[in-house]
Structure formats: C-alpha cells, structure tokens
Image (cartoon, rainbow, N blue to C red; front, top):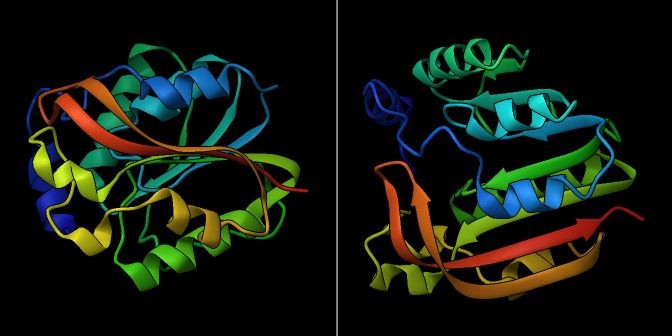
Length: 200
C-alpha cells in the first residue's frame, strides 16, 4: 500500500493527478440520487467531492495525504463550494453507524485485510436505503498502463465485492473494459469493476 509520502509527492504536482472532473461512473450514479450526506474515503485531490458538493450534497471526504487536502480546498474554492475534508487513514477513520445516504469508493485500493475492514465499515455507515458506489481496477488491469496498483492482491473482482458487501442488496456489479481520461495518471484502456448496492 502506498504511503502518505508517496501520495504527497504525487499530489504536489501543479496538475491534478487524476484531473479536476469527477469519475464518470461515480458522477452518473450520483446524479440518480437525492442529495444528502456523502462519504468519500481515500478521496485524493477532491474531484469527486467537489462535484458532489456542486450537486447539493453535504460531503465528508478523507485521505492520507495533507497535500490532497490542500488541492481539494483549492478546487472547492474555485467552484465556491464547501467540502469537509479530513486527513486520516482508512484503517483508523471513524465511519460510524447509519450516518450516510451514500458512500463512494473510487479507485480506493487496499490490501485484503484492510479492504475487508473498510468495506464492512462502509456498509455499516450507510443509512437504511443508502447507496454504495464503487469503481476499482481488476486483476486484468495488470495488462494495461492506465493506472492502479501493480500488486494483484490489491485489485478487486466482482465476486470479491459481492462477498464483501453481502449485507447490501447488489443492484449492479460487473467487470468491464473502459477508457479512462482522468488527468495524467489515469489514461487509456482500463479493466475495472463497478458496483452499486443498497442498504436494506
């Protein structure tokens, strides 16, 4: 798993590492929902958080990187919105119980034990009727140079996600090939898994 130092260095560049526009799948799914409380773990420089805030969501986001928070603050100011952004570790963040109307994990990759922990806590933190949105790279991404971890244990499959989120009602879960155009570090053909699930 990459350290805070790694991410601080990546986000120190002037350009936004993954662009200023939101992840396309996240944006598409979010637009179907009524704005409420949204949590974005491992949010990076804030592209998804700022988009959501512009749509009227009350956004809580966190990331390991202090530089990520600075970039998010800069992007939020540009669009004249507010995002509550904490510098925190996914393993230590206090997710709470039934707090959020939606939670989105966008390319939030963790080692297996931490992945399970984060996914369980995210499911618990959704309010009844709340929606979980996820996009991540699959093991097939190792054939492409469009981003993502190079360690296969940190890449996700549809079956893994169905197991992790079994308390939720899975509405959509599919592995697909897509073309990413998200800043300098997510460019080109990519193998991803997408999930939408609802808390009963």
